[in-house]
Amino acid sequence: MTDEKNIQPAEDKPEENKLIAERRAKLGAIREQGQAFPNSFRPDSYAVDLQNELGEKSKEELETLHRTASVAGRIMAKRGPFLVLQDVGGRIQLYIDKTHAQAEEVKGWDIGDIVGATGPVHKSGKGDLYVLIETTQLLTKALRPLPDKWHGLSDTEMRYRQRYVDLIVNDDVKRVFRTRSIVIDAIRDYLTDRDFLEVETPMMQVIPGGATAKPFVTYHNALDQQMYLRIAPELYLKRLVVGGFDRVFEINRNFRNEGLSTRHNPEFTMLEFYQAYADYHDLMDLTENMLRYVAKRALGSTQFINTTRNDAGEITETREYDFEKPFTRLSVFDSILHFNPDIKADILQTLEGAQSIANQLGIPLKNSYGLGKIQIEIFEKTVEHRLLQPTFITEYPTEVSPLARRSDSNPFVTDRFEFFVGGRELANGFSELNDAEDQAERFNKQVEDKDAGDDEAMHFDADYITALEYGLPPTAGEGIGIDRLVMLLTDSPSIRDVVLFPHMRPQQH
Image (tube, one colour):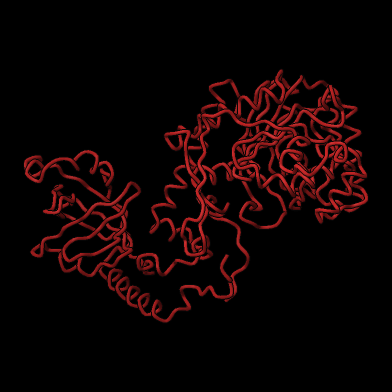
């Protein structure tokens, strides 16, 4: 991350001030002539469609076709009588003859201006398509110059702050967000095809529940009460299963008042879904199949590559993935033993033994930590970042899973999994706890933790307990981080690369 103190906003650069002043003067002259921002031009063609339709035809063929097109977009380059026009689908050239009545006007247009043009489509001697301008119009005068071949906006922080410029000049960024849209569409199609109902649940909640996280606090004036931005939609979605919707999902925005990092944004997108008469094994199978489907839709293949780069942008490591292969499944306990051959099972399964392992690893412990919590701390320290290939980690301790169903064979753990790939957690799912009395006890334990100073511990949700008392069928539920999934599929190193407008620290001038 770059030092924000070195970031200088565009308006502080004298050379840009001069260019902006020149462009303002041009706009002033246009205003005097009439409407400076016309809204009557209507394009009928995109650059990409023209390339697909006409790109393979010869120069001579195009001459005989007399194919006329109206195009609109932003000027990205000027080469004598040629203008390079960029629209939502790609680029195409415009050509204006020096004898044209508007030739001088067009000569005065700047890179970044938005224009429309109509005329026949031809092909240059180099084989590039162009529209021979018959009529043209300046639609929007750009007052700020675009970065020169990206050199003027190479600072990563400024790319995030000025995403609109990032999108104008960087095709790879456009590709990432197009892929993100396809991923969400694919998830929606996969679930609706399997009889899941898409729903919407409240973003403002009286009690933030469904996860362990510190919430954002707000206030509702009319209701005269404190409210919270949701940290998860889980408890509302399970209320819907109680109500008789056996399969529900929500592609939802969550808010968690936590630190900023390459993996964390305070506002993020998740898929959460619930299926009655299913357990966590069913959801692991569904997740495997869904991710294969999503990868094929978004990338055209289940095989893709992630890279690690140094500060100079050079690739230092390449990692290949193939979602067609079966995903690994390991319990928390077994994964610790697998990645730490020096740790013995009999020591890890006692409180004193786990405490001694944690101390050796330099893991700070609180007096309130039981065996399950300490095992998770060891797992997060020594295993999580090493789960590079797709892996389901199962059987999370009950102590750290307040909403998950206890295992029938081992009440110390729950029927829960987390899904990891590339050393990142992408999903969390479990067989739901549908025992109202057990759930009430666990809420009470969370309240004790909160009273002891744990900001992330859950509140006691009495209405949710009431819902469970009406009867929740055997159910399994899961949450998948959309942002992290898109990071994986687009080889993006930071969550900010897949969020259009990431939250940033205040800019220091």
